[in-house]
Image (cartoon, rainbow, N blue to C red; front, side, top):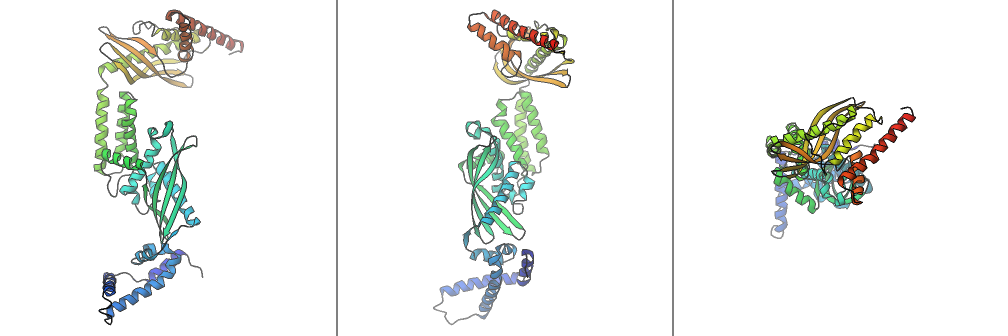
Length: 481
């Protein structure tokens, strides 16, 4: 008759009596006495203690009977009181067979995939009990998130998207396994660009195979763990809130990268979102308080940068681009003279505004349905003195054009401060499409290199693009549009 593991375990549980306190004490006393006898064998050769002999006989009978089962099915011993530790102690180490290695690799793939997506509920199912929240496993989970999230860690600006097991060696001792694993970090184009080694301890019972611990074997992990606990405090030995890891990654990303790249309003919005996310996290009050204090301090700094002057220049940027897009509705370029000075640094913007209006007036484009002022915010302050502020702005203008709603763009403005207020004296774009970036700037630069003045270069560049608009309008007419 063929029995499965559950039936065998029931038989073993029925065969092995419950370990009462007196029975456990008897075994302990017996072991101690046997050790004492071993060291004084020659002096007490004939001295026999009947209770000791009886206990030894009981142990021998139990072990011999059970070892036949446990030798074939060591996982059965994992949860048998008193027997599991004996079976483990006397079992030899051996190389895990191919079937066991495949089971271990499948389990680790599931675990690392879940950790990569911060799905800690799914990851916890791969671990024994709630051991994923143990300090060592928590830090390993946080390190996986760190590896996949921070571009400055990667060589040549590579961007990781997943971990892949490239090598796995495992050994077995009774119902426990030790696996030495090499992980590849894979970039978006499928290229391996970095590796990490880790040691994984696993435990098996009749229900299945589970991870007990993951420990990364690298200097990178050691430095990360020190940095992490320096910032967020010592991780509890057990029961750490795993949902804090994405919050911590967002905070580290903010302080290491985004604080230098984003404007005060963007940063304030981001930090307020972090606080709302933190409020919903399942973690201890002490753990959450540490994060709340860190984020709140950064939020105060960001809000302090939103001064009345900043508000004024942002409103100026918003108004400038509102008038620019209004020409695409009316077919006539707006007047900018009250907010912008025409000079070498703004001349191409004026020609760009004329070209945008002409696309409508000459019939190359249909007019926009509506244009309304939007919002603007400083992304980066390039220079700020008593006389001048130069900054990179993100401007969003409310427009409607069929299915299109709104346009966002980055511009660089130089703004003069004087008794009369603020005046734009410089305009540029580093990114974005359109006539300014791909037409006016390169054409004007070519004409200036050939010896033309900035006024002549701007006029000539405009005329080339003006003729292109006329040809586009004619083509539409010829084709019945």
